[in-house]
Amino acid sequence: EVQLVESGGGLVQAGGSLRLSCAVFGITVDEYAISWFRQVPGKGREEIICLSSNGRTYGADSGQGRFTISRDSAKNTGYLQMSSLKAEDTAVYYCAAGWVCAPEDMSESYRAYDYWGQGTQITVAS
Image 1 (cartoon, one colour):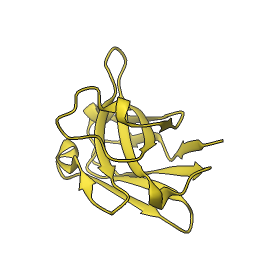
Image 2 (cartoon, one colour):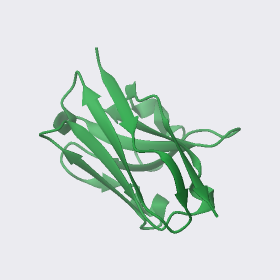
Image 3 (cartoon, helix red, strand yellow):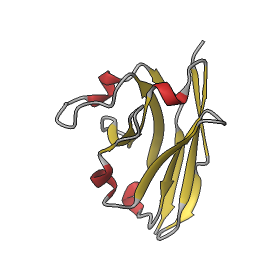
């Protein structure tokens, strides 16, 4: 059974930083694309950034240079490092895994991913 488990969310002051973790079970993180999404109430899931299995990063501009994606093969875990957080970054954040990163012009890009975590809430206080 494949499981993705996010952690690291919480309350942070505007301007602060957080690192989210996505522990992966049942598949090897090096062999899959790992992506991070976020969702606010009433809106669809927004893809933030994706790291392909060959190490390329897609969608970095979505975070305006504030978000960095990485993975640790030994821990089979993906990460999202966020800095200079703003109130509008408040959302539930999800990690996802798929064979490839969704094409950057793909609408409803969440359809490109097969496995999802349960989500972790980030609240940025202004």
